[in-house]
Image (cartoon, rainbow, N blue to C red; front, side):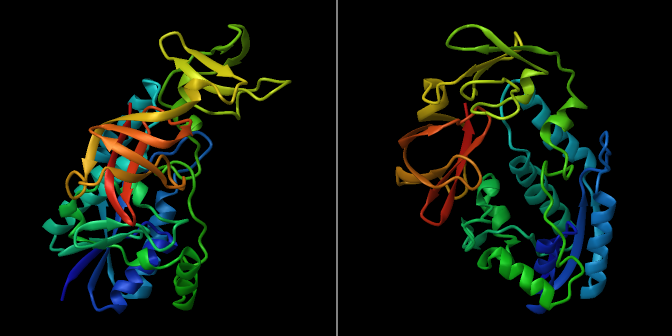
Length: 341
C-alpha cells in the first residue's frame, strides 16, 4: 500500500485532500508543518488553532497526525528572503518561495526519510507524467505559486483537488461531515494569516517618513511612512487628496522617495518587454517560443514570445513590478517562469 504524507494546514482543502486519499485506499498520515508561531502586534498567530483543526480532522479520518517543525528553516528561507526583497524596493512572493523551499523540498525530503512514498497537498493543480498542469477550476488554479517546484518533486506529489472546483470541494467536505467544511479561507500573508504586508514589515524593518513627489511636475504632493510599503502601479493608500487619482510609478529607496503620476499612460507603468532572472523550467527549456504568460495570480493568460531570458509581450501590460514572478504556460502545461528584473 502506498504511504502518503498529506500536508494538513487545518483548512478545508487539505482536509478533503486527506479524506479523498483515505477513500482511494492510500495509507495516509497527516502532517502539520509548523512554519510560523510568532504573534504580531494586535494579531495572534493562528497556528495553534489551525493545528487543533487538523487534529480534529485526523481523528475523524482515523489517521495519525505528525508535526514537522520547520520554523527555523522557514524564517531563513522565506521570511528573511521576503524582507530583504522589500528592503531593495522589489515585490516578492513569499508563497512561491515557501513552495520551492519548504513544502516541496523540506517537507518532501522529511516525509520520504520518515517512510513516505509520496506527499500530497490541497493545492489546486494537476500532475501528469511529471508535468504540472493547470487546475480544472481556473479561478482557484495555483500553478502560478508552484512554478519553481522541480519535476522530481512533482513525480512524488499528489494533488487530488486539481480536478474539482472550490464549490465542489466545499460540498464534498460537507457531505463527509469534515470539521473544517465551513472554515473560511485564510487571507493575507501566507504565514501570518490576516496580517497585511505593511503591518508585518513594520515590525521588522525600521522605516522613515519621506516625500511623495509628482514625477511630472517635481512637486511634493504628499508624505509616506516608508517607501518600502509601496509598489509599482499602486493607487490606494497614498492619501493624496483632490483631483485625478495618483499612481505609484517609481521609487528611490536610497533617498526614500515615492514618485507618482496622474498619467495612467505613464511609460514606466507599462511594459511590452520583460527581462527575467532566476529562470526555472520544470521539464527543461521549452522548444516553443510562442507561449502564454501570467504576470500575477489570477491575471489573465496573455501571449508572449520568449527569447533567451526576455519576454516580448503581444500586448503591453501595466504595473509589472521588479521582484514579482512571471509564469509561462503552453496551453494547460505550466512550464516554469522567472523573476522580473
